[in-house]
Image (cartoon, rainbow, N blue to C red; front, side):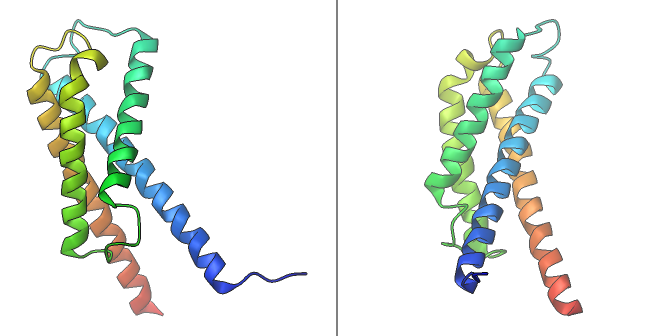
Length: 147
């Protein structure tokens, strides 16, 4: 039986953590935009076709992961729980705002205030992203103290 090098295990664990963070960020963006659209009344009386809604959700997920990769939010570039990580989340949010504002009319038709919906969704998503990273950091510190 061959044994793996310890560095190889750390890399796999790090890649898995980055994939989980990217998935959580995509969920936060979709949820934030849906809550903002629902709260603003954009979804009332305007039931989008299932295929169009699925394409919109997938497009938001792809844009979320791409903007996170561009800002370096999922790499080892920033120490976890530091101000640099919060800044990378803010850069990710800025990239997403630019992308979503430019394509928001194509994603969901019939919005009355697309820019305001995107901005409100971004506030929800960024708050959730920062809170999730802070909670993960706090739980890692507590588990390290208990050892």
